Image 1 (cartoon, rainbow, N blue to C red):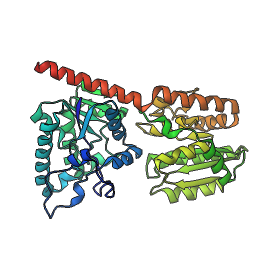
Image 2 (image 1 turned 90 degrees about the vertical axis):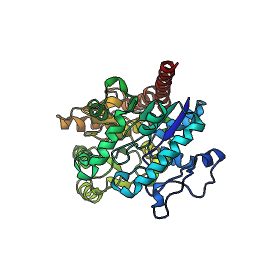
Image 3 (image 1 turned 120 degrees about the vertical axis):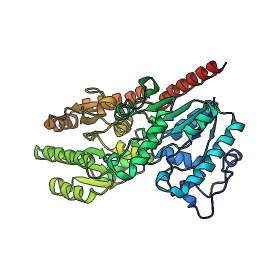
Image 4 (image 1 turned 180 degrees about the vertical axis):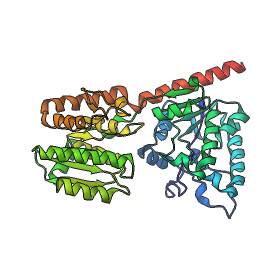
Length: 415
């Protein structure tokens, strides 16, 4: 396949490494029409291979899909480096959008693309190029993992234009790949079911492999000896994230009252960090450590040091954090009502408690911490489960086959 790849969701501050010299191909993908001298240059982000790797480690696995398709010998090129974030709120950018559409169309005359692939479009960064090029070139238009709005974002007046543009783009897609159940439910009101394909949340297990050296080093640094470690990871922001972390703190407090001493390690940062730190110190004294925001590519070291991962996952729609923990060999304790049920196998790779029975969550945490044999069994089962059922490469193959079928049908229709 000849694939035109586009990423609307690029930081307005730019992610390009200005010190990296572009390759011949990347130079060919650079924009040919300069922006007006008065236009903010941050809207034009000429990202290179180093930037794709950086974005991939941040969790935007559309970048990893890009690399996979290249490895499969598909001819894939960057269709445009135009950043659409917030463009609908900046009328002075419409002239640049018009020029970028011309650039994208002219580029297709040389690349002869057979399919357009846009990744991670959203209400704040809708795809303003893909639908336009699809209409003029009569090629299939595929969207990979559109990003749902933040909780409450859909009710903000300023986001209405972005919502409309994003919905309009998705309605023109021949196929939309999603890995969130909530996104699937939202899209059913805009697209026929046959144009929506759900793919289980996936990651590269090798990025979260168990590291014995890191385990020993961190446990020695924390001076925990043989003490059991409970780990949780979340953005410490107001709402369900804070409620979930508070639930873990309360459970560890109850275990401490029962005579089970544990160390709680909390990774993440946000507006509620100070509040949670104060509450945790009151309830757990010195048996809690806030390690702050950890780069995603470094999380495996901290997972390796822990003995169990605990987080309710209230209203979580993707559950990627549960996959990360399991890939590193951590049994999971979570609630069964949301995404954990799609990523954790109850009684095999972890324990899932009904949200209506909060005491079960604490009981399950105690069970894993006090039962060494079960903990070891779950540890190995968790690693195997992620590699067998949630490996990113398997998901990318599904995407590749689906795109090939669309292209074949399109070619057949015109033959």
